[in-house]
Amino acid sequence: MADRTEGEQMATTLITGGTIVTAADIYKGDVLIDGEKVAQIGKNLKAPGAKRIVATGKYVIPGGIDVHTHMELPFGGTFASDDFETGTIAAAFGGTTSIIDFAVQGFGERLEKARDAWLKKARGKAAIDYGLHMIVRDVNDKVLREMDTMVKEGVSSFKLFMAYPGVFMVDDASIFKALGRTGENGGLICMHAENGGVIDVLVKRALAKNNTAPKWHALTRPPEAEAEATYRAFRLAEMAGGIPLYIVHLSSSHALEQVRLFRDRGFPAYAETCPQYLFLSIDNYDEPGFDGAKYVMSPPLREKWHQDELWKGLARNDLQVVSTDHCPFCMKEGFKGLPKQKELGKGDFSKIPNGAPGVETRMVLLYDGGVVGKRISLNRWVELTSTTPAKLMGMFPKKGTIAAGSDADIVIWDPRATQTLSAKTHHMRVDYNPYEGKKVKGKATTVLSRGEVIIDKDKFVSRKGRGRFIKRGSPLLQT
Image 1: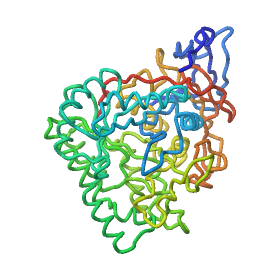
Image 2: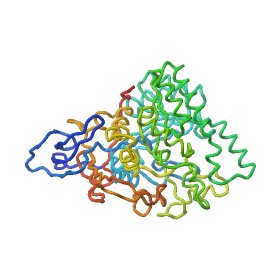
Image 3: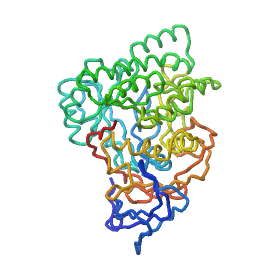
Image 4: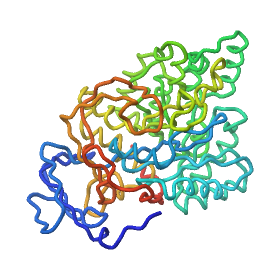
């Protein structure tokens, strides 16, 4: 990773005239940045010689944190089309200044080897700071001990799958053991909760009847399969001693009911949802030809009525985080030299690579649909997209807020700007946008990462490889 020069380390920047918005407060003020940190917040601050950024009429918010991305993820015979360079630059354009990606353990592989492989993918490429979760596919006594080491070395969360038999899925005994271990070492289990065994049967039945179109991906992964697995996961965590558990990419009201059930009992139950489940629906699979493949992701898109329930969950804190599950695959072979991807599933929906792009559009979709749409407050927007992700993933207060001593990851947000989401203008390396043509209000006009301006006036003005690995601690749990 490239080192900053001494001159850059000592640079001071003064952000003036803006409205500072954190998870707790909204107030007019100036922000003085010294090197990579916030040095002072106040009114009418003086800083002779400092670079000045005038934020009059704009919001000054902590940089977004996307805790669920898959850069260059191998999947189904191909790999996610964004790598750590293109994906993190795209994230920055959207106002996200930190991501947490997923390192994948190979069967029989040491966790350290998987971590190092992903650090190698990121090193020299990432333009913003990044952390890692560990996908654990093989739970045994040796791996359980390695989980302790990972937590000590800053990889403090572990993803387990209740879906994808033979690929990622682990059994209930393995889940129970891993939960018990994080109860001891201070880590956090992140769960992909779908009943993989039942889904596998439904997929085989559909294909046997020659039901091969993309929509069958959704029809063979019903919300009941997500709800059952969510309930079972929390019961396993309860049996393990009331261990904290975080459900990833929750998509349905059915699963949300289970989260609410356990939270209402005082259980440390947490969950994220994603913009696709708030703005898209099962109807998108009906787009002409093979275009429904754009929306093949797991869990799949649901009927529209689920959207209102998820928004209520965000407003009431039954859902604590909005991430993206950014895992893009191109529709057409050859886009920017990429191989066949979504087209691998033509004639067999089960072979369509699962995933969609979103790391660049998360912040504005939540602002437009949530704040402008009066579903959530400005403070709640910051809380969902930055502060709570930082807390639950062991990065707060270094990340996720604007406070003296915190990293100067700051976004100047223009609430009056409008934009139209499109593959023609986005920076993600993928040939479609799930929200093509959608007009939204709000825009990240200036983005700072550790005190350095990296996005300015629709241009990336920094360099790849400047991003640093975030060594994370234990989750700061909330009610």
